Length: 469
Image (cartoon, rainbow, N blue to C red; front, side, top):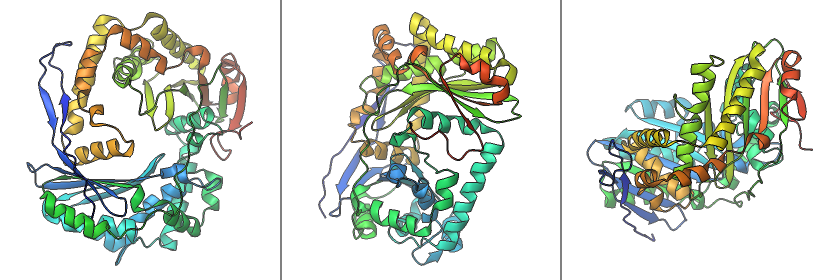
């Protein structure tokens, strides 16, 4: 086994109550060890002996971006299927082995990775490693379990479109903004792709896109590092490499102008809207200042958007803005919902608030408040073994230096008015923002037409956007 050890001590600087203070106490991320197995798997070991728990976060690069064209949803179903029987256990026996010791294992898939997230008592570390290794190296991939998962995914999608589409408006937004780009493909599939999936597609995806050379195994908790290295080598050392190459994802250019996707949901009493453009990536050096802008604009209850749309006007129960950071720039967007008859008023107010952000910026008092808020939210993200495992795994996934976390608080403190003013560019101006509106088209068609050329589809139509032009 080739072992490359790097003791990484990252200091997480926290603010004292006064923004701009230079003597803020630090919060130290414990040192951790990096081990490279001969088959290419990366292992990160972080000892946290204060609580008798152990957690692992395993990331397999590729994720839903590796789904074949027309087979979107494959990675998502595979992730669910990994826990439905593995090694010598069927689905029920696998679940019983976890529940029998009070442990937890979760499986998931997102754009850039398939994930395994587990937490057990430290005394059950061997069982945890056995179960996660079985799932990744020896999954049963049972056809009957696959069929149940596929049908459930189709039913869940139908229920979401038939009911409250609040959780889908962002999916429509990404599909509209990234139409024809890999980031626009539905991560969980759509009605057509799910209906066409076969168990053979899942087996082929597993063979081609899961392997040791794509994997980061982060373990945090109460354990002896030397003994854990040996355990991980035994559990994962024989895992083969993935058979196919990682998907190549180009950067998408920011859109110019405005265009509208109107999704007709007849009889809807509310309009759900999303507006955005291409934003920033995981590797953007202005991250701290951008986080402050996002917080002020739409990242907390007292944000500009929520204050205008909920607190002052009562047009909505909530409005928010977000930055999706991926290897390439994701979206920078805001979203909300309102009663049908107030559609134009609410969207006008949201765009006016975005325009105000760009025209007037962020005053000193608001910036100081945002700094305190961001740092108050930051520290609790690095408390538990599970959180620490996730944090160091995420750094490794994107090849990020420890400085991304080390000194984040200090960078928040040091962000100047000029830095934050420049960071407003993460959100496009209203003139270059794409809009999605889900509602009763007969009642809101004229209202949304003023925001740009309109393309219509029905919510009952398969997929989340019209085909690329």
